[in-house]
Image 1 (cartoon, rainbow, N blue to C red):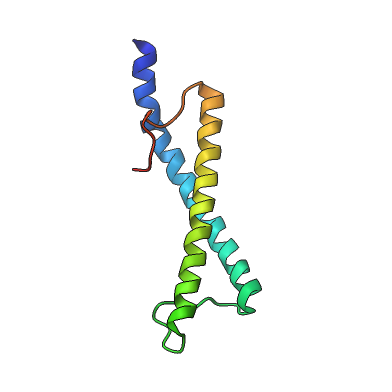
Image 2: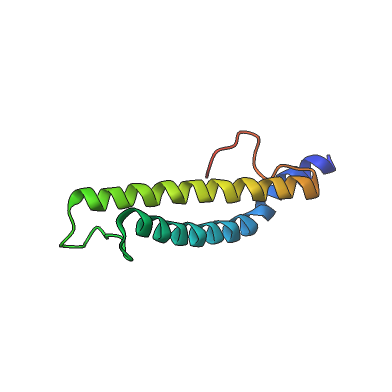
Length: 101
């Protein structure tokens, strides 16, 4: 019974750790996107949706690249954090069904 109760509490305890990891992955993804955009377009600043002088294609390309980098960074950091928790506690920090909340 104690193991079952511990298993229910661990995902809740992982929330603050997951939040910190998510924040860190967002920061890393932002830096990676800036460097990637500079390599692709040789520009320091990527276009923003409200840049009047940019075309739709540039804006959507930048958004797609940024989204892909963010998703990869977040997944890598989430997975590494979950594996670390599992190694240190013996319990996977997410419900058995998985998926993002």
